[in-house]
Image (cartoon, rainbow, N blue to C red; front, side):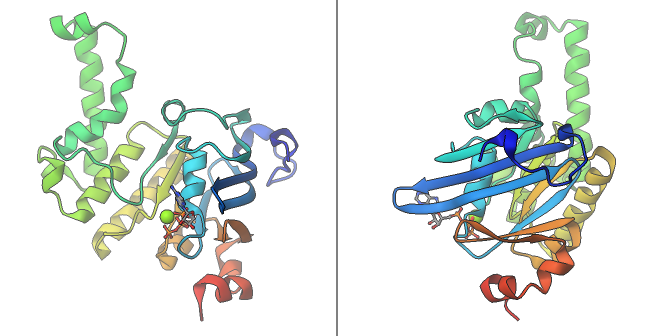
Length: 269
Ligand SMILES: Nc1ncnc2c1ncn2[C@@H]1O[C@H](COP(=O)(O)OP(=O)(O)OP(=O)(O)O)[C@@H](O)[C@H]1O
Ligand SMILES: [Mg+2]
């Protein structure tokens, strides 16, 4: 199916309301079809929970959306523009931000430095000399970025470890740090791969509150891969269940919870 021909999820809404459009996205690894002709429209502001058994293709689908892997077939569109062949760096600068199943923090950098990394590109190429000489506009720019980083660090409960090197953090804090990095530069589309894994109950609650706040304030669009069913069902507007690379079910959380096929393939009794 062509991207332009994919059916809008919400008929009647203008097309610009569709942030993410997947049309027959397929990813193969040799003989394995990890993602099998997934077609999905995500309207602005929606939180989509992506669930399914191990090996269902959830991470591979996030890789295809975020530009880490070019689909073998099919198209990915962002805000109506075809981005199928765009690089991860390009997509990241255009507001597609993600976290990884295994954290990717820079261990040798402090928490604050880690959170500043995604903001760094905003200053690049605008006069290194200004930095060196400490020109006023450069100082103001740097101060604004530091302020933004510290705001997110506080939001994610990391203020106490702001100047600590990431390598020394326990896993829960590392996951929250990765989340902080994903949200610091105001994403348009946030992709989260099992964000609660490694979090304690309090950290999970904190993450839930921060995510809810972001979604309410900024019309953030989220694709959330999660095995913690209560967490994902509580947050998502819509659940997509992937099995063997294909969409088995797509609907509101309450409906998916009692879908016999989803229960048989994944949720269990
Ligand atoms: N780089 C790769 N090379 C070959 N096969 C891969 C690669 N990455 C993933 N796969 C295969 O693709 C399929 C989907 O894997 P994927 O990691 O996307 O599943 P998942 O739904 O994220 O699973 P989990 O819940 O365990 O994280 C699996 O069969 C996996 O073995
Ligand atoms: Mg995965």
